[in-house]
View 1 (tube, rainbow, N blue to C red):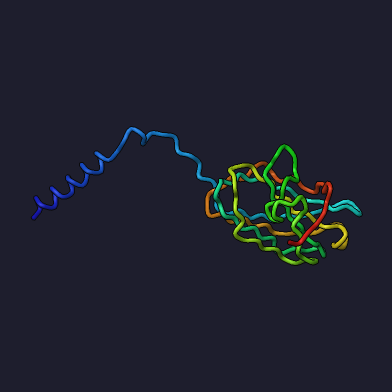
View 2 (view 1 turned 30 degrees about the vertical axis):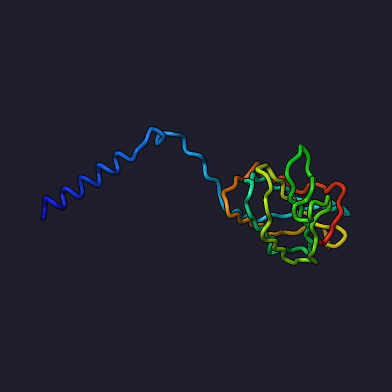
Length: 172
């Protein structure tokens, strides 16, 4: 019986060793993350809508979900998710390719958008804007969460409190 067990163990080891290939020494690709969560805040100038901009690299075919929660400061949130074309504010994936921001919330309301399809591998900018005309005061906070069915990478540090250019809000 001992010989049979020993033969089985040796045979298993030989099979495992023979399955190794020359590609085993290849550099491993960094997998990235499948979820991102961060607390943010706005401190806008008086009478201006402002935004925080986050960058991510998403892969073609990914399905992502974005949620903005714990909104404070009597803030009305608008979102823009667009591929980077050398400038911010390309066609918004959240508004059927329109150039407007997705804005369907009132003051201090959460936003949750699921099943967003990524059509091409690229760097995307997520702008989280605070609408001056619908908010009260100049400050507010929020928590952003992104979940993807495939790995993605976070880009450079967030750009904070940037005045929104050509700001227009739509709820489609």
